[in-house]
Every structure is written in C-alpha cells, then in structure tokens.
Image (cartoon, rainbow, N blue to C red):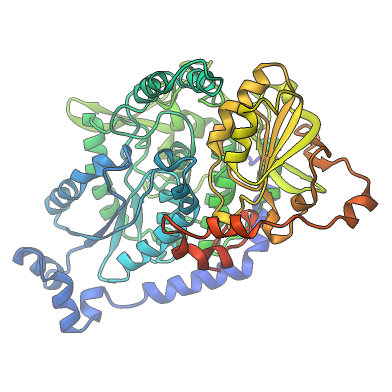
Length: 602
C-alpha cells in the first residue's frame, strides 16, 4: 500500500470527524432497510400482483417462486439530449443480458433530463439546477416500488448524474451501478468553435456561419466532447468505482460499448452484497474531489458533490476542496483547460491513467468498488480480444504528454480550482483554464442584474476598458442559478483586445468561463443579503487567484454604511413566471446556498 499524502489524510480525517453523527445515523438506517425480507416475500399479494402484472409468466415465476435476482432500471432517456439518445435501446439489451444470467429486469421509472446546451441563455435554464433535486425525487419514486435487489442507473449529463446519485443514496441499502453511453465522435475542434462565437459577438460573422460551426461541433449521438460537467461526471464516477471499469468514454456505437453494457448487468448481479450507501463513504467522496481537481473538471461539482455527500450523511465544504487543490497536481489538459477533447483524452489514457497515477502517488484512497478488485480495477483499459471483453494495463509513461501527464511531471503542482474569500463573500475560480498573467485582475466594477443587460452594454461599446463585470441576483434563491455561458464570448473579446477583464457573479459558469477569470457561485448570494448587493458601479474590485481573495476596495466604514441593493419587483416577477418557473417557487424559497450544495430537501 502506498503511503497517503498528508493533505489527503488530514482532509479525509476532518471530513470523517465532521460527519461522524450524520454518517452513523445514515448507516443505521441502511442496516434497518437491508435487514427486511426481500420485496416479493414482504409485500401483500395485491402489491405483488400489481408489481409484476405486465411481465411474462416465466419472469413472474423467477421472481416469486425461484427468488431470482430482480433488477431495476432508472433511465434518463430522451431524444433531446444527444448523450441520452442511445439509451433508447438499453432496456431491451439489459433485459436480454439479465435473462441469460437467470435474472429479471423492470424499468422502474424515468427521470427528467434537460439539455443545458438547448436552454442556455433562455428562461428554461432557470429550471436547470433545480432539475437535479427533481431527478433525485424521481429516482426515489422509481425505487419506492421496493421490489428490487439492485439497480442500474442510466444517466450522463450535467444535473442528471448528481440527481440520480442523490436519489440512489437515499436507497443506499441497494447495490447500484451507473451505465454510461459515451461521447460523440470528434467534430469541429472546441477552440475553433470558440473563435467563431467571438467573431459573432463582434458582428464579424452572421448567424449562418455561427450555426454552421455549432452544428459541426454538436453533430451526433453522445456527450459533447468538451470537458464540462457531463464528462466530469463520468470521471468522478470512475474514481468512485461506480462504473464498469473504463466505461466512461467509449463511443455509443462501438462494439466495446455494447459489451460494457452487458458487463454492467453481470457485475451488478455479482455484487449484490455491495450496497451503494456503504461504498460511497468519506474516502470515496474525497477520491471524487481529487479526480475533479486533477483533471480541471467542472466547477459545478463544488455544488453537486456537496449535495451528493450530504445524501450519504457526509459533510464536505469548499475549504476541503481548496486544501486538496493545493496538494493535487493537474494531470490533464482537456478543453477548456487545453485544446484536446474527451476522445483525445481517452486515447491518451483517460480516467484509467489518471487514477493510476493518483493512487501510486498516495493522492487517492484504495477503496472498495463495484469491481471486486476495488478501485485498482479502474486503472486498466477495457478492450475486445477476439470478441471477448477484457482489460489491459496502460503504458508506464504518458501516451500523449500534451494531454495527460504522470504525477511526477504534472502540468501544475496544484489542482485546477481555487477558493476566493473576502469582503464580497466566498467564490470559486477555475484557474486551470486561465493564463497565469490573468490570475490577478484589479479594475472598476460594472454591475448588471441580467445577462441581457450586460450583452446590450457590450454591443453598445460601454465595456471597452479594464472592467470587472458583475452580474448579481443570479443565485439559487433569486432565479435558480442559471449558467451564464452567453457572457463568455463578449468577455473573451474584451480580453483579446488587451483589457483586464474579470467576471464576478453569484450565478454559475462551469467550464464555459474558459480563459476569462471568473469568480462564480459567490455565496451568500445577493438576494440572501450577501455583500455583493453592497457593490456599486465604479467600485474598485480585486480578484486575486494567487492569494485566494476577492475584495471590493472600499473603505470599511463606507462599506458597512451602504444600503443593500434590491432586486426590482419587475425582475422578481419575471424570475418567477412563465416556462414553468411558478412550479419551482418552493425550491427557490427553501434552497440552501451554493456552498451548501444548493439543496432543496434538507
């Protein structure tokens, strides 16, 4: 066993101590649920008849009389998400694979899955973050039929995986495995797509050219190929041991993908003694955090994995992420942290190479996993050997050192995320994507309360100077904390002209902030009385990603005497109506801060 890095050991021990009471209570509930008789033996006859009424007679016999294993499928299939479209055929394949192994399967339920790429910059995006908890509730509804011995979870994209995992952990007495679908083939390189977006923002190309570029980038089945939240999800699930090893980034239509889906059924049936709530312990959560930092993954997970951990009785916070980030080296360069896409990342070694390097450096825990060999099984690459699924070791040296590196020669000695703290609150910044000469920006603030107002000011030429663009009242309570990707091209244009530019917001930005320094997820949010509501146009703001500070350079006495800005009644009305936003009013009222996971169920 490799000695653990002292920072990893310290942070894990602190999380374990902080979580002792809540984790103990959680495990006690799991034990009580696991001790019950199996579903069809425990339930009344009418319940059993309803549960299996539509199944073939031989399957009913297997479940009730032969007591064969019975598996649930919870699916996020729809045709709106390119990543989820391949799931249409999965239930039939899974049923057939289970039947060959003497088991039965039912699709227990479907959960909603929205595409942030479709809703970006539109009112529907304000439902996006809350869809995570809606998905968790949908997962609970599916599993509440309570006749299952285990479950396969079909989901990939941004809020879907965290939502499925939160729901699954509330049924933590069951063994569960995620079944991914893989990325689309490489299209227009992400850097070229970004250039066209910037040209469009400047009015140098029209809508026809922009649409042509977008369609060349997003062109087929599978996840988008940049390293955003969806693909970060897959990296984290590999690091938690909740996939078939190496399943994350295999193309949806590859023969290997079909074999990996069959293997998911076999592996789950072989591991009915491995409840997900026991596998996902403090060490497992820390491994996910490390994997995120080592690959420069999505900042959204500083929200989502706080919520995931809480579902398992584990308490983590942004300080934990920050301390790990100082010790975890950056081992991958995938867009927006580099020019490679996820297919190139996979070809260069992908999750398996990165996990091996981290384990060997003492920067990950050697944890149990769904694979019987534990997390070490995720350090190998799946491949087809004369029609048979098997695994092989990666080379000892990086296959492509411009994309993936070993722990001894990283791209950076620290991870890709940084915590910012100061008189404006606490925020995070994705430093791995930002050039070092942009890690410190000091400039006057220009304040907006909507994306549209900022874009109008840009088009009017009002931002042609050093500026810290502030977009406030974008937090969970205000409007559901939408992604603000529409701001990226104009900010990049301003930075490209030589101006010192930064973004400060209580909204989300994920990987789309790219090369522009962006202090995001600012907590407490402005609507909750956070200090961002004290900021005024022209105030000097200093974002320092080296020191980890975010300050309004205003005399303390003046700062404390200011009246907080208020969201206008008109804008509050807009935020609460149309596009189904009325249905989410309770979530906006009850949601916790971004740093607390933006959960609505605690």
